[in-house]
Image (cartoon, rainbow, N blue to C red; front, side, top):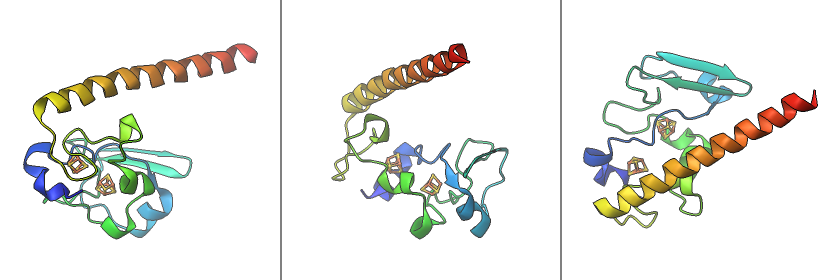
Length: 129
Ligand code: SF4
Ligand code: SF4
């Protein structure tokens, strides 16, 4: 994928709330002010006032590209709905508006399903106590 071709439209929307490994955060300084930061286990979630990942440069390029997390390397993999980029295919083909809308609608449905499953598992754990 050549994301630079798409930046004018997508505004790097995939670079938002991403789990950053603690060792990455210890090694590299943020380039955006972390307004929202949560340290959970081995990962850190850090976003700026616009909800962008704190490693996203002003030119919308990743400032730790060669050391970016696994999830960022895999983003765009169309075998997972929630990893699919609605702006372009993994082969670099730019998607049209209808395709973008279809993917967005499917992703929103899937997010709700994931959230429901998560709540169900949490409820089951709670009632077993
Ligand atoms: S993966 Fe998609 S949303 Fe992210 S920068 Fe590339 S084209 Fe834009
Ligand atoms: S680490 Fe880099 S590729 Fe991953 S979300 Fe942040 S800016 Fe984007």
